[in-house]
Image 1 (cartoon, helix red, strand yellow):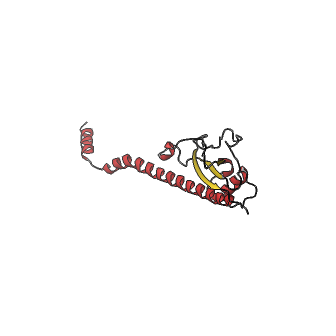
Image 2 (cartoon, rainbow, N blue to C red; image 1 turned 45 degrees about the vertical axis):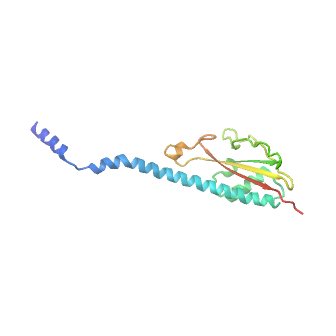
Length: 178
């Protein structure tokens, strides 16, 4: 019994392992911050590349360099220029509509995104437009978070399935071809 009491007294006085307690307490927080930073970096990279693809595509449409403007052609052009969207042709949905500059009309809130459960649902509106017409294009791309259960990945608002949506919007006037 005295050996056990002596061992417990010695164990109580010992300060070995104090660093381990702080390590165990703080490492999960540091790891969560690291994972959130990685997720945020990927989110920003994806948004910038989506915006780049949309800007380059809109420039070609505006200048009349795209003879047959339809949804599948624009989707392919955006996907070719964005380069970082996984399964781009199935994850991107395009809405394009003319606007009257004197009346502005109403553009629905929220982008029209792909429904992963029923991808055959057509876009909300797609009108190619005419020369000298003010157009608005809105493109929604769905992405799966890299780390969906921790940090920022768990806080992102979800769309279809477990994906979050990134939206890029641009307006332009179709130039005359004369």
